[in-house]
Image 1 (cartoon, helix red, strand yellow):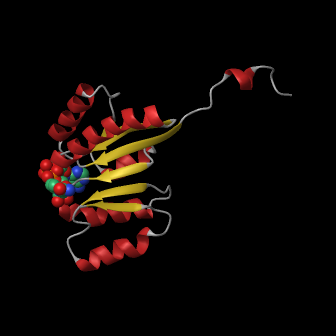
Image 2 (tube, rainbow, N blue to C red):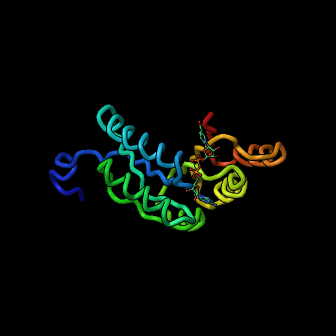
Image 3 (cartoon, rainbow, N blue to C red):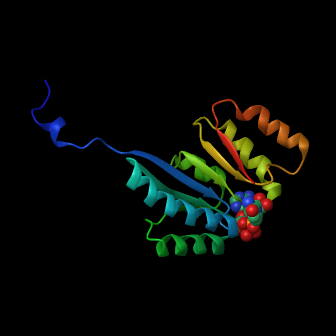
Length: 151
Ligand SMILES: NC(=O)c1ccc[n+]([C@@H]2O[C@H](COP(=O)([O-])OP(=O)(O)OC[C@H]3O[C@@H](n4cnc5c(N)ncnc54)[C@H](O)[C@@H]3O)[C@@H](O)[C@H]2O)c1
């Protein structure tokens, strides 16, 4: 039996898109900035919550800069990981921004594509460093993974 008044009193839960950033250098921090602005805009216009839940980078200094920037932007502190696999295993994000060095893209993208839980992906240019790797990533990316390459 439905509990009286409960449905009417509760506002519908806002949809949430949780972002993770892999590679928190210059471009990773640029994406953090952009996502913070997007969070404000999207929440005002639509009932969608955008948040950056996690950062992955093997260099502690980069993670520290990312955390500092998140605090300056008024974002809740993202969880930090030393690599993309730990970030994926955390289950903390629905969309991944790949802004690590070019030569790491292919391996990271294939791990994201092959991961049991599907993710949306935005990868910084270049997609990969060889045509062969680009074709491999492209041929697998249709299978449950929406991918965009920033130019
Ligand atoms: N769209 C554009 O206009 C534009 C401009 C500059 C750079 N880029 C691209 O953005 C990407 C990042 O460039 P950047 O200038 O920010 O470099 P950067 O050197 O400033 O930052 C790279 C970060 O990735 C980290 N990293 C290294 N190996 C990693 C790994 N295996 N997993 C996760 N993180 C790792 C590094 O520690 C560093 O913090 C590159 O692909 C580059 O080509 C795009």
